[in-house]
Image 1 (cartoon, rainbow, N blue to C red):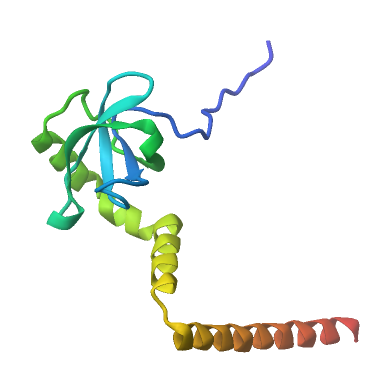
Image 2: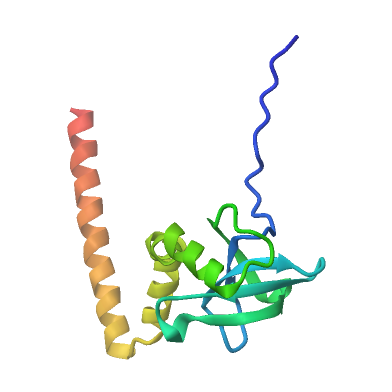
Length: 148
């Protein structure tokens, strides 16, 4: 009999404990965890955060208004209370995982770049040109040494 290897898919599933990012509305850019799936279009979310400004109150949200992240709080019971969610959130280190992710870093970079004035954008352009020149110079040196 042939051995069959079954792998889990890489899709981000709507599941209890999945951390989500709000796309729009009053909580735009904040994180919350799915606590209960109401139906195929809505979920109950709760976002306990160490910072009061980043906290999300427990409420129902349309799945069209959130993005599923790669972070999951494992074994979070369905319809867990706010205290239990906060405890699991802290234990799992959700905020630290999010801050370390490339996604969060890119969002922060985009936010910072959007707040630049004209002269600051010009300085970024010049610095990128300098870095590109140095990289090309190093590549040219490597190519020249490889030919000889």
